[in-house]
Length: 243
Image (cartoon, rainbow, N blue to C red; front, top):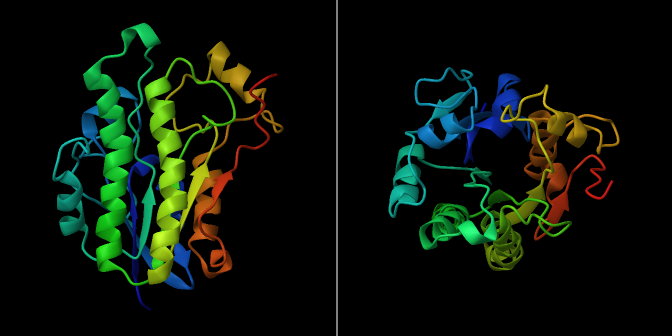
């Protein structure tokens, strides 16, 4: 059985899916993931840090800061041949307009936008067919006034997906963008009022889960998703921002 390598930019979204031994097109998939230890630990992700225990199906690459020049290229050298590329890494901080700084704005842009473009470039050089999925947010559906640098960077991701899909179509590489909506990756206290308020805004009165989004991404990277490219797909469980 041939093994494919799916590289995931940040570990939390595919955590549960790896535990079920990913299969795409009937072939076993080995997942490689990457994180930024201090940032992931600050957000209280359970699988943050280089020493975190992950599924046997996952190979963890060396943690690094994607805002540092050259780190994307180092990741590709370490990962080896990548068949599928999922970019759900993100840098995000809550900053009101009066608190913006040059450094903070550009950290969002470099980590979220520049690094994604370099990932796509590196992948295209080694691939003559495949699939890329990027992650955006809900910035086009409602205000995100407390995190505008993040919202701006994520809107750029949507356009990167549309534009690169046209260019990479010549190499039989599909590119799509997913907006997962609010997803419970463990970063918010489940007993807090805001957690429950957000849950109540979904049709099923619960947050989205990593599995909800992993199912969509796996479909996009399978033969059943082979006709889909250049799209920005929202999968938010009916989330109502204006309730």
